[in-house]
Image 1 (cartoon, helix red, strand yellow):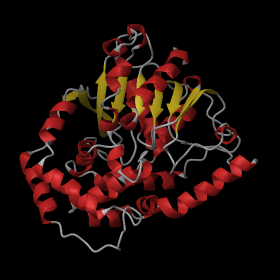
Image 2 (cartoon, rainbow, N blue to C red):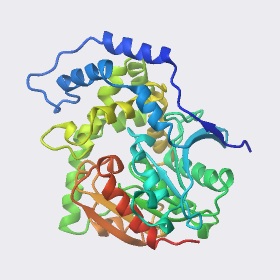
Image 3 (tube, helix red, strand yellow):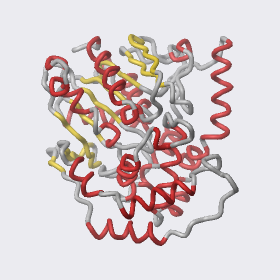
Image 4 (tube, rainbow, N blue to C red):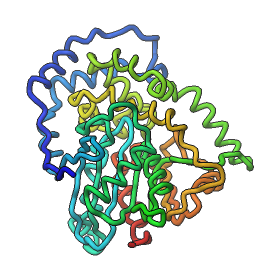
Length: 389
């Protein structure tokens, strides 16, 4: 098996100039009066963001900051996987495998990885540290892409092979939000240590795989009604990316502004945004740095394939009557209004060993980026009680 190779981000200057030229040449569109964010991306904000992108944003600064993280490329089952691998202060603790989602990236974890790996550097205890591994999902960022769509269950199998065979860990703990939560759920189900895999426990901050979701209480029915509204108003992107991703890709490939609108609108809708102000939660630099990991890598297209892969795998439902039985931590952030956790009884239909459930007053879909202190505290509290072998 190919040994991991150290990696540094180095986007060619010609690519940056091409992106800038396309942003500069974008022809703005008509929109309804007082549209705001109700019809999708807000054009006034997109104009403001693009002006900043052209005149003030410094990708090279963020490239240098990201390159402070130890990054590598390893080939796993024929696919080049980009990952961050931080050696922690206590290698006796099982490592943490942490996975991003869409439209996120490993940048979401920029401010939290070392705090988990080396807590003594941030006011914590050295004995609580551990190795931390943050891979980039195939088709995203600097990872290679599969030959055809790969769903989250297949990624779970890939991650288990990556952790055990490529990195040599006998066991590990998985964490994730968005796709990371679904991948982590499948890892906990398919690759638990007692099933000859390596997963000891999982921690998720979004509902992932699920068991029987039949509502039984008024609270259950209220959640189901909310989710029916979400399906109607907020999941057209999922249907497109899960059925006809290539048609979308042709429209977006040549338009950095189009990609920005598609992704930034989701940050507005899914983040814990206050008073309709996206910058109450995200800075322009955060939005653009995450975005550049799609635009500058030409990965907008292949990053959507995982949705089609999920449908081809059969969705996110566990086999009837079965549950994830590894110890599970749940971090429920109140600002996660598009994909909130259902009532605990419904979650327990799919997760039979919930050992920690924390409700957070602030923070949304991108919890590690939005509320890093609360995210780290929640993960660290879970890791303290998680199995070690």
